[in-house]
Image (tube, rainbow, N blue to C red; front, side, top):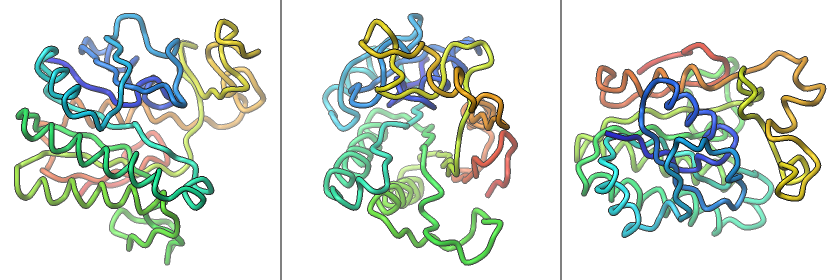
Length: 246
């Protein structure tokens, strides 16, 4: 059995891959490297360069690697860009997610973790924000993620797809072992033309002295306990702790 991690060459995705491997799981990483970095993927993970909406590729990966769970990070995530290019966000975040969900169901995969966003709440009517707060996005980015949440809800009802939705506020930090961290084109690895190191901005700059929020605990807990969770579960990822479960 293996776990497919889409966007596994990105900031949070690569940390999730490390967490899976540390726990003895097999990880398959699918990433188009539009914003992620090949060096961020551990050598012991199986890396595939490709699109998360390519259903023929997905079917082959599911069958060849005996995938039984999916953690879906792949997405465009910059709010201002989504306002300028809404259709690109709806294609990459929503249309590709629909293709991934459909292929998963067709291949008999029943465990799905979705990396969503607190942008689904828009301007919250109350603070602190509860998982049951109204979802009223104010950007195409927020809507593109909420649409995927809705598809997961409906697929769960129709096909028994067990899923966890993680709604992030702000995440920061780096792997305690220094294997991965926040990075960008300006802080890329030296062998890819940048001036930074492989851990990235957050591990080497003044940010590292600030309180660190690490998503890894909540993510690992979600995948390793998904068989015992309710069919539909939503978590906030504002801290390492579980904020709520429904």
